[in-house]
Length: 435
Image (tube, rainbow, N blue to C red):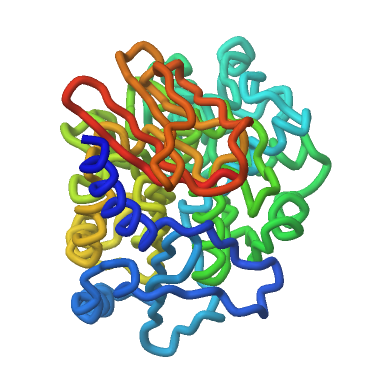
C-alpha cells in the first residue's frame, strides 16, 4: 500500500513541479527583464492562446497579462498600446487604497474603527454631528457609510452632497465619494499626500510605478499594465515581497480579501470577492443570487474598475490576470458580463493545469502560504476531523497530527516536502517549499 501511495505521489510531484516553483518577484528596477514561462511548460492548452487574444482584441482590450507564480505566462498588447503605455486603473485603484490604509494602520497612523471625523474634521458630511460621528473608516472601506448623494453625482465629495440616509452598517451601496475621501484620511493621518505615501510604501519597496491624478472629484491611479500585475502579485503573496513583509497586519489582509459584512458578502475592503452565495452590483441596493463571476475560481478576489479594468488574483492557481482597455461592451462600473466571458476563455486555456491542481477543491483554497517560513495555515478546519502528515520526497514520514488551524514547520530543514491531508473520504496532497 505504501508503494502504491508513493507511486501516485511521484506522479503528483512531477505534475506539481511543473507548476510549483519558487515564486518570482519582478525586480524593483523596472528596466530589468521580467522572467517568463510558457503555457506549454505549465501544461496549459497553449493552442488556445490565439483564440483568447482574438477575443480580447474584439473586446477593445489594450493590455493583458497572466502571471503564474510571478512569472509572465502570457502578455499581449493591442493596436499602438505597448508595455510602456500608461492607462487608468479606475476603481481597481480602490483596492490599492485599501492596501495603503492597511499599511497606515500597521504603522500606527490610524485605526480603521476610528470615527472618520477624526481625520476629516467635523462637518465633512451634511449630516448632523451625532449621525456623522457614527461613520467610521471601516464603513468607508466597506461601502456601508449610509450616506446618500444629493443629486446625480455620486462622485461629489462636498459636505452638501453627502446626507445620512441610513444608519452606518445598515445598507451596502457602491458610492465613490466616501471612498475618495480616504485619500484625505491618509493625507491627514500620515502627513503625506497619496502619491508620496504610495511611493514611500510601494514604489520604494516593490518598485510600483505610476501616479494618482485628480480628475474632478476623483483621484485616479495611472500606470502601466505591468504595474497592475505587480500589485496583483503583492496581493497574491499576501503582502510578502520576496521575503520582505510589506503588510505585516495579517488580520487586516484577511479581512480585506474576505466578506467584510453580510449585506454584500462579495465585497471586502474595496476588493471584490468571488465564490459567495450572492452579491450586490454597483448601482443596485438589492442582491443577486450566485457568485460574482461563476466561471472564475471560487477563491478568486479582484480589483475591478469602470470600463473593464481588471486585476484578478487566484491563490489556488497562483495566478494574477490583468486586463486594461476600453469597455468590452457597454460602459459599466466595476462588474460586467465581460468578467464571466473572459473567465470562460481562461478556463479553456488553463483547463489541463486546473485538472491537476484542483484535484480536491475542498482543501485547495484553504492552505497557505507556499513557500513556508515557519507555519502552514489551514483556514476553516480548526474543528474538523482532519489528519495531516508531512513526508520527505523519499517517502519518510516526518510529522503528523490533527488539524488545529496551524501546522508548525520550524523544525523542518529548508527543502521541498509533501503535505498530505485527509478528512473522511476526502484527500488532498500539496507539494510545498520550506525556506
